[in-house]
Amino acid sequence: DAGVIQSPRHEVTEMGQEVTLRCKPISGHDYLFWYRQTMMRGLELLIYFNNNVPIDDSGMPEDRFSAKMPNASFSTLKIQPSEPRDSAVYFCASSNRGSAFFGQGTRLTVV
Amino acid sequence: GENVEQHPSTLSVQEGDSAVIKCTYSDSASNYFPWYKQELGKGPQLIIDIRSNVGEKKDQRIAVTLNKTAKHFSLHITETQPEDSAVYFCAASLRNNNDMRFGAGTRLTVKP
Image (tube, rainbow over the protein chains, first blue to last red):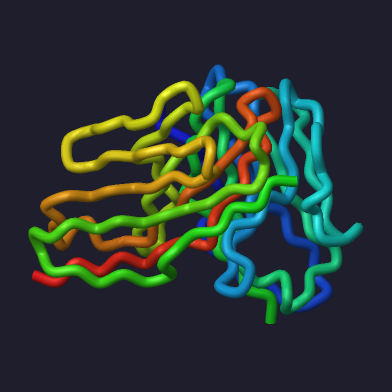
């Protein structure tokens, strides 16, 4: 398996634009997590899914953030409209009731 | 909810020395404690984990200890090498809900 795959690796966008981050979890994993990493706040859990159903989205910072998991092999994290303070590295991870495996992350810069 | 504290934030050791990173957690119900290593430009990688029914686990130069009474766990790296230089994160979770909370990270530098 290629591991958790995220795209794009880097994204630079202007304030106010919509940003969509994508994730393909490891096949067979039934949990999917979205994390955000910044110097100030470290690794923060934004939302996680179990069997494609959102279980806990209490970490989503604002209504501008939304996440979907239309099927077991794909998830998106959308920010609309984006703001400079959203600049961070966003990680997707997946697990199968055990250890979580992370993707390489998407470095988002909002200018 | 769970709160994980990690110390130190930075650690510098000489090649060949040992490194110890410590974490405490707040939720006594937490029963799964993984450690991740993050190299520059990469995602965190699981290096070792321990469950609450075990007090210690070893994997070559890496060991983790858990004290459930005191609610703290530690990562021990022996015979450190320059390639061990990275940021290390501890985490704690309830395996049932997979709500994993991370410590703030420790930047380890191993000097040749």
